[in-house]
Image (cartoon, rainbow, N blue to C red; front, top):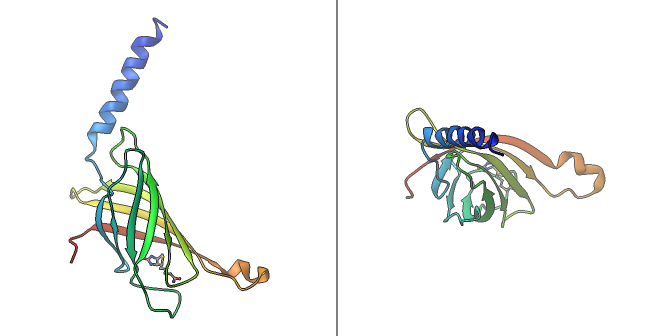
Length: 146
Ligand code: BTN
């Protein structure tokens, strides 16, 4: 235990220094992605839970697009660029999208969300299950809410 203490101290300081060496990326706020979709993420709780509203610019359906709720988690830890995941429950279609990603501060000091997603559509029967999932990538940038 006596020998382990200096080692743990060095480890703790190294991890702490790493956590402090990057600027903090904060999920709360208004974000716009490369497809023109936007979302608002409300306050992140102490446990890392958050809710928000997603307004997609595009749809795999012909239905009229409506703003839809999202719900997710981010990792709460000493690192400043947290990983996160959230689900959007589309109110105007039978689909669900799950996003997973990480919040970064880029070399221009701007916050960006690098995400990948799975969009699950409703399959009319088991045989068509294989047709029902799309995968993709979106980058979000913090934006001014209009
Ligand atoms: C649907 O078409 O059934 C619901 C809308 C899906 C929109 C997708 S989710 C992944 C991609 N990123 C966006 O911002 N919009 C599309």
